[in-house]
Image (cartoon, rainbow, N blue to C red):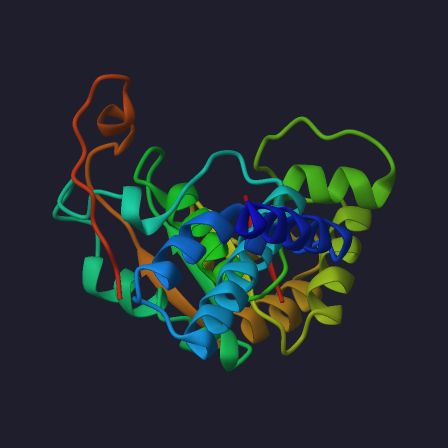
Length: 243
């Protein structure tokens, strides 16, 4: 009875200190300690690790919500064998996030349905796991937010105001990583800007500091239909912008 009273007292103290990670595992850890599996220091250490794990998971959850991804996309859920046109080795290398530490960017190009947006979001999710803040947005939404209006989600020549807004946005993020997806190759982006000087100034800088990934082949989307079996694959500040 004394042991139960002490346990309840400890649980109350953990609630007061807002240590819910410890609270959730206290009974299991006490059972391990009573069975001789944990010494005094080990007991305290694993309880601290339980709390750290809870806080880390909660922080990741908050960053994922702030990112506003379109879907829960991770590399564990991506089928790298879906198409021979998917450069799996290059993508797995990008998943190591060395480009992020270097302040470099990533450009994913290819036809509709090739999996570009999925990979972009998976890279964003990977960055979140490593403590980075990520924001996902379509270019049309970004331009609409900057202009305080609406856009129709089409990919066409930018207006002078839109080109200036995009130029300022990317210029302000110099040295910070971004991920772009597009159905068009970077060389085809230049005509979208009404001012060729702005286009060259902006795109040359962006393209020359980016890892370019070409994703070709059949659509990846049929692999994501309900009921489709997908293998579970495990691999190894920051804006994700979709055009």
